[in-house]
Length: 196
Image (cartoon, rainbow, N blue to C red):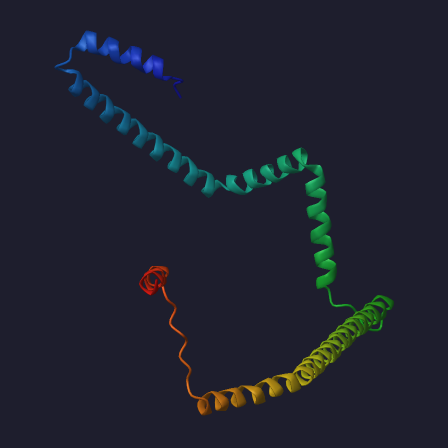
């Protein structure tokens, strides 16, 4: 449509302000807005009428085929790949005669696929079993090491435990001794003076 930038709109606004005046400028903008709204409504009605006419005459299908051909012209590799995909899909969707060579080959390949899947599943199960056995053996080794370590230190603990009650019993039998009171240096100095 119109290619107007901010500078052009600013110039138009200044000219409108000078020509129309600040008092009548809001009325002008309202009328311009109404005119633009009516023009857009008429353009919408026209384009919808043209689309309806194109649908009725079959132009949509033709335009979609033209779009496909333009796509093929602009991206030939993608179009070729789409053709190959559709051809392989149509081949895989066909039911093959089991008595034909192609049917026999397809059946043999399906059996081979099943054998390969069964073999890989068996190998995975064997690997998991082997890893589980290794983990159990390692856990048993750790338990055995843990069980033997406390057995070596247990006699030392029991001997210490036997000595502790003996010390407590001896402490109960013996009378509590009072520690001699220490004389402070001031008291000892006073005691020396009085004795002299």
